[in-house]
Length: 125
Image 1: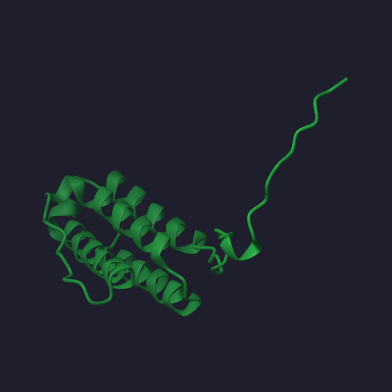
Image 2 (image 1 turned 90 degrees about the vertical axis):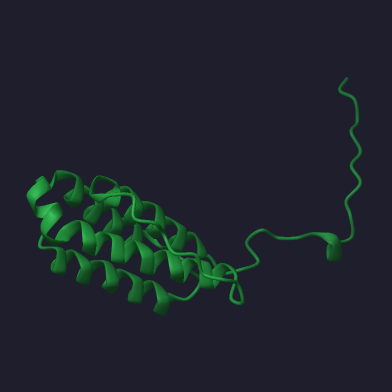
């Protein structure tokens, strides 16, 4: 015979549902960021020197600033440092994923994807 287990359940008002906020599917943003980062990694050094790395850094800084503003609306926005042209792809990836975690509004998601697409076009890759 199996032992009988008893469990005490707390009152409902004390329970917190981790999904009480609406979860936004940020796959379009992470896919766009990954595509841009992959193209940066595959680009020749000459292309990075001309414009692609600068565009990537500018995008990473913008995405990072947006994530910081969403996470701490009244806080000071810290600028992402320039880690060099070979780190630009990683900086875009990190900033894009940070923003994806912070997003709650579908309009902000659409705008972020458009930023990535525009930066990719300007970078010429």
